[in-house]
Length: 247
Picture 1: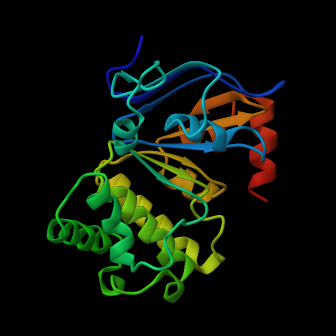
Picture 2: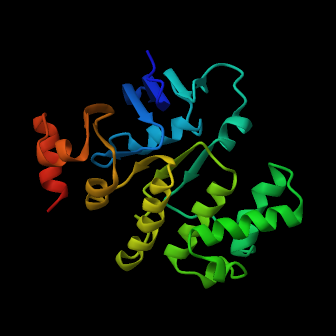
């Protein structure tokens, strides 16, 4: 039975590419207002799991509920569903010919049919939220990688999603720029945003996550609070990964 506090509830999730099964029956819940951090070796299915959560990948079996709504059922309204699920990718995916404000404004006008003035006001508010109000009229090429990623976060936030999914949001950044993106993510958590994060930023997971999920070979090996996963893992496979990842 689904926990009433769970905003995201996944049961029996499977994903196959031909004969290769990438996700092998995952069960997972992400509670409202909490940060769920997904860790695991490369190729373990972490990004595939996130992409199933907004139907960028089509699950082979299982169910995904967002706020009690089954988004995997036949005939689900994907456009409406995706408006409730913000997604931030490894690559920033900004339109190079649009300013930072233009990138944030676009979906507000195209998807939500906001007027230009209303979309502008929301775009400026969200850029301010990620610390970029002074860069609203600059183009992506004029911004650092960290700034571009913060624009991408502002763009996702502008649609007022119920949940935010982050797929390796700092892996394309130079090390000195990682902190500014993690700072924004921590502020979102403090504001009560429900977040599911795939990342190799173990120190951030230790300090900011409410729940850490360790995935290997398409299966959830262990789930628990950060202090369990990092200090007292219950499974040898988790112990081996954490020892390796933190050196």
